[in-house]
Length: 91
Image (cartoon, helix red, strand yellow):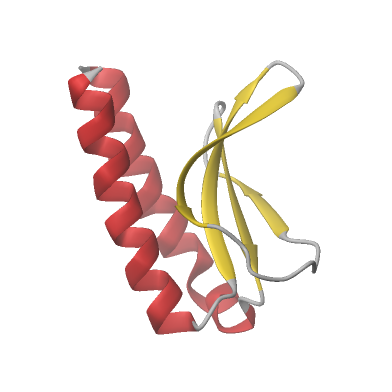
């Protein structure tokens, strides 16, 4: 549990950097539990626009709003998030 909390803090720091760099309205990670989703970390959206959803791995999804510039580097972002979240699975 302690390691999971540390990993999510690292993910949140990374998402804050992305939020500032790409001027997203919101960018956050959710964990999928069956048909339900649970907010894990990130910057909650400030608007009512539908977010874009990208699969990180089998259990986690990345949501973001107004991230047009983010699309160019989305592959790198997903790889970095996979690395951070996989640290949690190893422990």
